[in-house]
Image 1 (cartoon, rainbow, N blue to C red):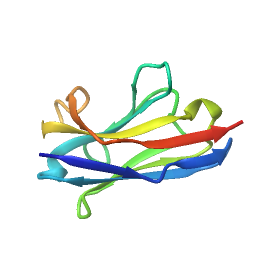
Image 2: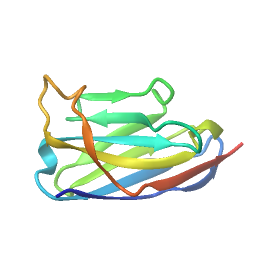
Image 3: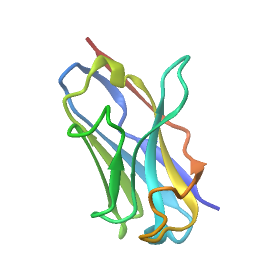
Image 4: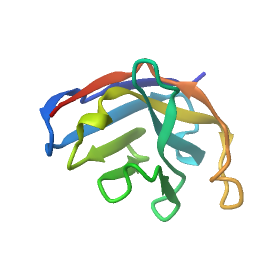
Length: 125
């Protein structure tokens, strides 16, 4: 069983930065794809970023160039560095993990089945 606990959310003015963290428990963290999702009120949940290895990352067009996903496998922790935040980035942010292992030929489409409870990010305009 995988448990994911997010932290680092908060309220910031537009243009500010936040760094989200996700502590994961349950093996095997290094082989899973990990990702970040977000959901604003009345809006469908959207995938923000995903990664398998440092050279296999993917971002939603709306955050490219502003957000960076990274992971520390020794600490079983996933991060999301968010810079140049915009009002429209306001949402609950969720950490996610795949059920099985990821590989170079499936990391882009591997489904996420585990989600954390979320951390709120509020950006004031």
